[in-house]
Length: 143
View 1: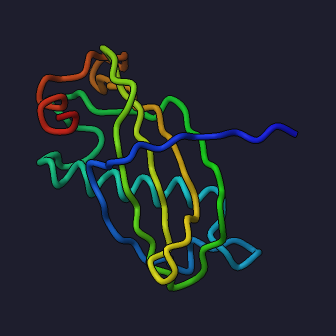
View 2: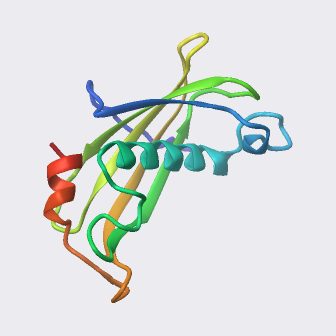
């Protein structure tokens, strides 16, 4: 079986630390695959807030974002109480969106836990249609 790969940049635009909670665990007692994306979402929201946006659905007026696709590559296990560093970088900017790349590392031993990518598309929640990236997003996130 061919494995997926995801190259990461040398530099990231944002870093945060999140602690693994009990509801992040699956029956294997480690972070479940679905919760890797939840951790990425929490980190993404923290980045957006640092940039001055209230949340993911209100960048400018009724324009926010939706996730068009996602990729997760697992490198190791994370357990209850682990502190994880999540680094975020942007890539592949186009008229309607961009990719966000994530590196998740356990702080205690610097073990890489996962890499992820989410394809972000700007979306007008009033018209329910894809929208161009607002200039304010380009200025604050993509500089």
